[in-house]
Image (cartoon, rainbow, N blue to C red; front, top):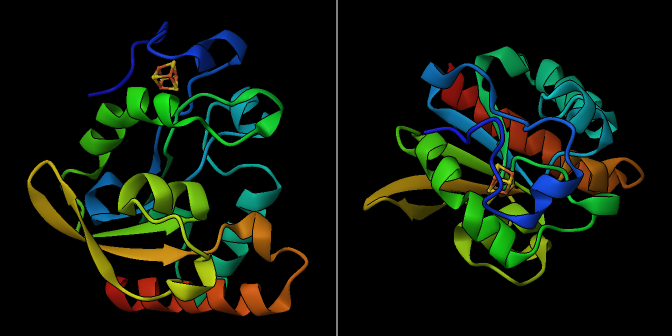
Length: 176
Ligand code: SF4
């Protein structure tokens, strides 16, 4: 189930250039979920192609896999104005598309606070849950869920960067 090209189920449709659909290997069963498209993603129609995407791709390569080995998506498929966090009602409107992407997953990696709030219902500090495997329920099925830092948060923080590198090592272990 994918949004129609003219989807207007929430207000984010007003400012978008392109709907940003999942990218990568849907058959891998491993899905990275970020927050929302940014400016580059909105322009190109692909998730994680801007600065955060470069950080993410570099970390994947360092761990021995690439973005083509997994599926990458976002909680909402259209860019929020000025890159603000998506509102709960926007996430709720886009949720059926996300659930459809996650349905066959064996591992979901939540990149950052918004993804963890949307999928785990978690509102606390990321440091308390990062890299601690848990599970979420999607359409009646439990799926393993790994909370992780958003790549953007790691750009100027070496400690967070090493935690995200640890996330990539866990994923690499799943792919082997
Ligand atoms: S964010 Fe999702 S629900 Fe909202 S307009 Fe875009 S595709 Fe439709």
